[in-house]
Length: 334
Image (cartoon, rainbow, N blue to C red; front, side, top):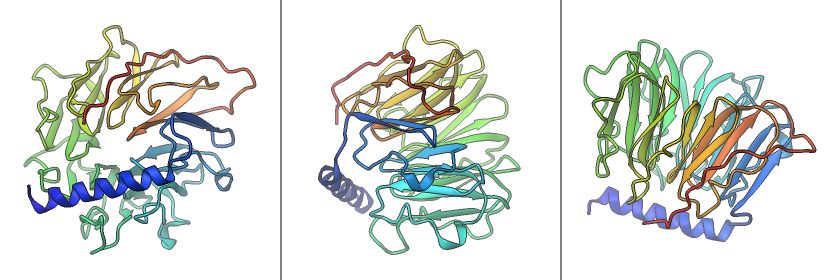
């Protein structure tokens, strides 16, 4: 086993140990009405928004142990675990408009109003630093950002992709001549890109087939990646999945149709249907697939680790309507 693999195992052990010490509300859900954000699953990192963030939310993102949001005034807010500095927004950015946000295991990436990128978390040379917060010099004209476990991705306005950070499995080796990209996503140690023609490209770790894209996968309009698996939403509202949840392959529910948005956690998937209902499948040991009752229209999805998050367009009503739930609780294979 190489040095990087050993270091990652050490990082994982430290993370799991500290999570056990900090766990206070696992297998539950929280709702912060003023921000219209609902979170469920493993909430051991205090994933619910605090009273300091009562200005509303327009976009959400979540990593394994922390969450991020963009307010209506385009200012960014980050909360949750901060042992690696991933919630410490640089002072120069606290009043800077942010257009897109992404969260990795221990770092945060933001697209600024002028097309440049900022990232924070482990500082250079400290434990947990794999270069994921060291934005390439001269990077500009960016239109979107994404984050893997320990690497970062940027989509440029010309349809090309730039990646940096941990690269011992090739997750930052963007394929030569990759162009016409319209969306990006990062898994644990692999990366995903959606091209304008509806096809998907993947690179990096392929030990569990996460880069083996079916030749007949086309007409894709949205992608998601996490852990060792990938998800694609087709224009006809159907969903494709490949790779594995840990060591187990979990197929998309056979009757799943009319999907309009998707999000992927490390071992589960959340899908939003056209009628406003949610469907979740995968491992459920922390309740990440136990969708709670909610009121309001779902505007955005986010998932990572063992938790899920949605952004609602109205505060919760006194009487909540039940969400449609399709959860497959599986024994977690490690």
